[in-house]
Image (cartoon, rainbow, N blue to C red; front, top):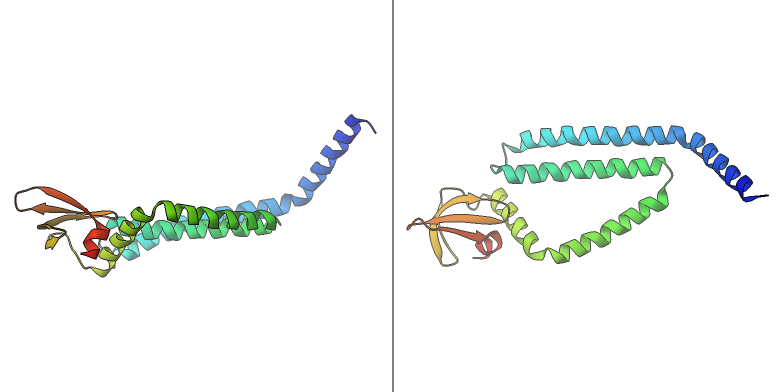
Length: 169
């Protein structure tokens, strides 16, 4: 057999495999797009539903986005399972675990401020307009976001304090 014949036979094998797997591929793409559409619908619905519970838009959008990403990831894993790509699925999960660990360690400070901001928003410990004394500053709270709290002191100075420090003190 010459190299041309080997190459042509290999291409014909790929063509046969592609034809055999075409129905699974179409089903997998359909499942993924349904999951994507469903995630966008859940994102809109959860954002509306959370307006009654959570006052801050940043917290609402964070929760809605996390729900959306989880649904899309579920759709991706389901699609890979339909395509019988179990090895790829296992590799993806292992890679996601390692990446999550590395990102968590690298962003410890940012994540602690973010989780403190979520706690402040959900537990309603601190509200915009409250007068607070924290970390050597006292003033009126003018903004609370995911990472920090802005306080306007009596002399009109704006102080930005990380949420972790606000929650700790």
